Image (cartoon, rainbow, N blue to C red; front, side, top):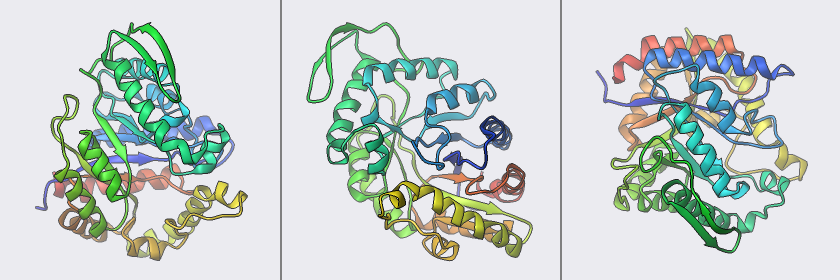
Length: 335
């Protein structure tokens, strides 16, 4: 028996073809299967103007998923706060928390792509300040009776608050970020942390998060997690055969807007071997995958692992077979 580790799903909801409704149905079926195996949560990314993300409104996607599940915790990872009017977002958060029966995990961030923000004419250089003001105003709208706010980006004139979330004082907060500075911010604000990268870097981030941890009413105990692409097949050779071309498609999706502006991000690769060496992708037979996750549990300092099962151009069938193998042959060792 290995160490205890909780599992979730992280999903970009990448486009595979023209039938977007079928894409959603496949994801809902995957989430239902994950729930039956005892996964903790389902986290969906927010992206715009790119095939990387076919759930540009996380709330709509999760509201539908809430009606098809009963135990999974559901959450955006993350809402791109610089793109929202915070009071309007707070109302939608309240709705989603009630529709899900109090299963909402509230992930927030400012976004990694300057080009996605530019679609909405938000300058990347001011996104940090926008995020900070939007976060404070959103939390105020979730917890106060009235809002009167006059800041740099948002103006609210003595507006009464009619809705409250089901969870009190608000849903647990999550912060997505893969730097030591982000780990410090999340810890000091009492937010769960979701990161990415090699185990050794994760351990340092989780240590910083713990050193700065200040529990809040919504997050009395921290969750410290990371994201990994995953593909489990019957053999190592079969897993690699399926994963190698799919990882290139994932890369093409994630860098599409950068390429259109004749730039490229430095923290992604299209090479599966390099991704595995950097420990951001786990590919292989159940035995190989179990050994790699044991290594993650021992080295990363995390107690939560969010896995992507359908990515690039992988089919729903491949993703579901990978999930079934993981749920039956890998996951029980970490219960």
